[in-house]
Structures are given as C-alpha cells and as structure tokens.
Length: 295
Length: 259
Image 1 (cartoon, chains in turn green, red):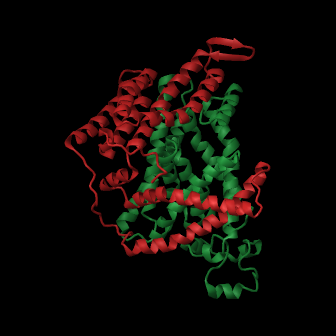
Image 2 (cartoon, rainbow over the protein chains, first blue to last red):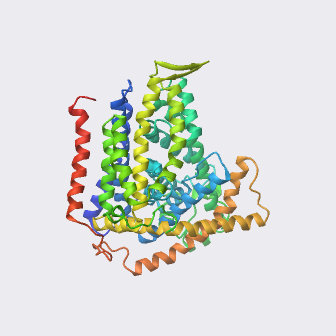
Image 3 (cartoon, rainbow over the protein chains, first blue to last red):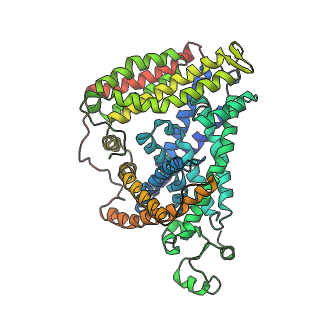
C-alpha cells in the first residue's frame, strides 16, 4: 500500500483513498456504536436493530475497503488472489477433517499479505468469505470484516518486518487475533446470539452464567480461540515461506520494497553480502535483520 | 463449477435477473432485522421463501442444506440462551442448578427466527443463481471486473486445488507421514503438505498474469458484456419496490415508537 502501486490517474487514486478511509471509519464507528450504545436492558427491539447495524456497518465497510484496495492491485497480484482464497478454503476444510481444535482458514490471506501487501490481503479476505458463502454456508458472510482485518494487519506486520524472524510472527498473529476477536464479537452476539458452533456456544454460555453480558461473553470466547488460531496461522505461513526458495519470495515487488524477509534481493548486493550470510536459501536468520536501515 | 451449490434448473426464479434476487435478499434481511418480532420472520418464510423455493424446484436441496447448517446452531442457541440468558427471571423449568427461563427462550426465538430467514434466503439465492450470471450482472452495473475474475477463477480452482492437496497428502503418507497423534503433531503435518502446494500453485500464477496482461486485463476502460443478462421493466420496478419496502421496514419501528 504505497505510492508505487501504479494507478494511472491521480483522481482515481484519491477516490480509492476516500473509499478506504470511509470504509475504515464505518467499521470503527459500527463497533464503537455497538459497544457504547450496547442495549443493556436487552429489550428485544433495540437488540435486533443492533444486529442490523452490525451486519450493515461491517459489510458496507468491508466492501468499501475492498473496492478501494482492488484498484491498487497490479495484474500479477490479482492473478495470485484466487490461489490464496482456494488455499484458505481447502486448508480450512482439511483442518476440520484432520480434526484440529482451530480453524486455520486464513493461511492464504496471511500469505498473500506477506507477499503482496495489505491491499491484496483485504481483497483476498473479503472474497474468501463471499466464496465461502457461495459454496459452503452463508453464515460466513457477516464475518467478512474479520478476514479483512487479518489481511490489513498481516500486511502491515510484514512491512514492519515481523516475518523476518520466525518467533515474531506468532506475536503478530496473536495481536491480530485479539483485534479479530474484539471486532467479530458484536456479530456473534447481536446476529447469532452467541451460537456460532457447538463448542464456542458452550463457552459463551459458561461466560454468561458467570454474569457476563452476551457481548462480553462472545468477546471473551473470541479472545480464547482467535489469538491462538491466528498465531498458529502466522507461524505456519512464516515456516512455509522460509521453506520456499528465496528466488520465489523475492519475485514479489512488495517483498523487495519493504524487505519483508530481511534479505537484500538484487544480485549485486547479494554477492557482496554473501560472505556475511553464507546460507543463501536458509531460514531467515537473526544476523540479516540488522542490514535493514531503510525502515 | 461443481464446487458451488448452484442447482441447474429452468424455473422462473432461476431466470430472474441476479441483481433482482440479490436486492430481494438484502431487503428480506433488512426487514427481519429491522422489525424485531419473530412472527414477521415467520411470515416472510411462509409467504416469500417457501413459495419461491417451491416454484424454483430446488426446495428439497434447500431443505437438506439449511437443516445441516441450522440444526446445530438452533440447538446451541436454545440450550445456551434458555439456560444462561442474563436477563432471565421467569423460571419455567428447574432441575437442580439448571434453570430454563422464558425470557431466554423468547430471546432465542427472536434471534433464531432471524438466522433461519438469513440462511434460507441466502441459500435459495445461491441455489438458483449461477455465480457467473451474478458476476456478469454486477459487472454490468459497474463492479470492477477484477472481482468477477477472482471469484469465477477461484470457483474453478478449488476442485483442482483439492485434488493437488489430496495427492500431496497421499504422497507424504506413502513416505511415512502419520496423520495420527496429538493436535500439536497434527499441526506439524500441515507443513509438508502446504509447502509443495503453495510452491506449485503460485508458480502457475506468474504465467497466468502475463497471459492476462497480454489481453489487457489491467485496462480500466469500461467493458462491454459478451452475454447480456436478461432484464425487464417489471423487475426494474420490483427492485425499487424492494428497496422502498426495506426502508419502510427500517422506519416503521422508529415511527411506531417500538424502539
């Protein structure tokens, strides 16, 4: 997400920025409204209206973000997004078949964000849930904003160099998970009444029995599962990327520009740096990170 | 496109313009959430969703698909809210420390009726609308063709992707990879599965993007449509009617002071 994403006309660039800004504001405003104006008496009517505001605000905000983001993407990135979405969905299904207690349905989103930036992550995220809705279950659609947040946070984590060291990635993942849990809680509470699945529903019930409000219970339930899930997802992505050939990773302009993997790409520099970093295809090592003064 | 739920039939509902169906779906969702009475949701199911499903001929698939999705949710919703709803006072059934409150059950009924409408109506849309038609209809209305490309391309990619993942999993099992063990061990399985998958799938991407660029994919000019999506005056009026109805549904409870 920078000036190098070559958009031809300046007017379009401004328009895209407005879309992104308005989308972000709507999402934040929706959350604040739902938390501050939380129906405390839980009268049926205002509660139901909150559900409408949760869906409408999040979906409209996510769509605006996606519209603003997709115009920034070069063709090479657009061609990559379907692969990432398929990765999200297929891995998500395999994980449920193997029987793991996590979702891992955002590996593709994190991967694309690390390789092509937050804008690509946003588009991957929202379209993952659209396709999930088309192929498996429409329950996923109101949660599109969660995948959007994963895309944004993973992209900026990559820019900040969180993918250079394999132990920083789970930290970035856990932080992303916390934000996801907080943002998705109003949907779970106001739209689904806390019942999004057997295990999660039981946890929500337990928190309610302890005296939490429904929103508080869904937030706590999310905080139990999301940070772990996202930390694992980020770790898997950083391990996959480390296992892939360096030539593959350095093909992406975003990776080269922000030095996502802490390695100077151009052949000339690489030769001079060769004595210092002997294993050219090894795991991103701690010693290469200090060669990144341009951050 | 076997990966979608689309049920290929030739009914009136299938032939409707996808945008009309999409707006109808949005209007229905807005209505049930705006008017907080469970019997409004019930009326919409009986008067709109069920007749549409019967006319489309996809009623059977709608029933089986939505039961699979809704049954666990409804079960959890009624049990959890019936037992632990924070505002519950009137105890209608008690056994030991377990109290079922009528407030909790009413709350679950309100939420549940809306989820049922949401799921039924959206599955009906997906069953009766070919994703390609929906994409071309939306692109005609100014959606970026990049969205259409990504969605259509993913739907074709998923089966191929699954095949590749299966064959990699089999190959790794043949080399002695075990799928059993504790959760942590099973997460480790993902790595020997994912690395070849990602490398293989992403290496195809570069060639594809060159081919797309050569066909002016990045052009921002407005495109014409190869297959125009059928539309009619009646549907145009109906769409506006749906929008007005949805707005009315939002306004009614505020005007009547229900809020």
